[in-house]
Image (cartoon, rainbow, N blue to C red; front, top):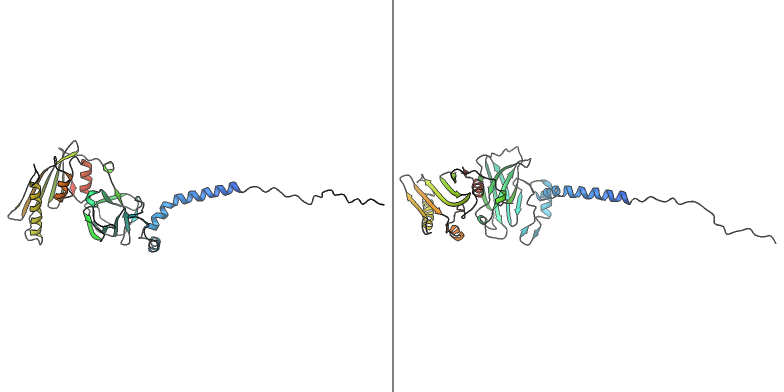
Length: 300
């Protein structure tokens, strides 16, 4: 019988080439994309939150400002293009409907949760040029509520150019943020129109205030109301020990003077006087100077 030579030896049909791993390339691409996202995220966020551009308006119309409790979640360092459709939020405060005309800026201000005394805080509306150079600062002050209040501020050394874009933001500043100020003879005099405040310091700490107001227009529509206001203020100042004030009519109007010794005056006393330009004892000279200038006073 012939042997059948059908051995079970393996036959090589071909070779499978070892494939190189693509994982290193994938990791590199992932890191590049992640880095690009992190770098552009602040820019994208600023565009989406700024209602002065078409992309921001479309985004806000669908999503609006994200809220958490009673606080608007907005990056306070974000610059917003100033315009009629811009809304700038800081915590519960909303500044909107901004217009620039000559040396005057007009805007609406409200507090989403009701009554708020801005004089208890140090919030400032900063105005910047297109290259993020600081041009001017406005102190946010007075009582606001949930209803829009239209306010305006006139700058002494700034005039807006209609052909130029301006940006802004709201910041809470502290003494560390205020620039140092040089004071002659321990006095800082701040004037605006008929009103004058003289702040007296010792080692740059506020000790006394002299307040003068001269009205020479008896024909003004609000003359009687204005005189009654300063006469009431004078009476309240005289009710505080070691303080003096007068409000008396003259041939051309009335004169108001006050000398306020801050030693022994409580914060409640100052609040009852109702004048945000009366600062507490030992307030720094650089804060007084910065805040008064941000209210439109010329301080020297």
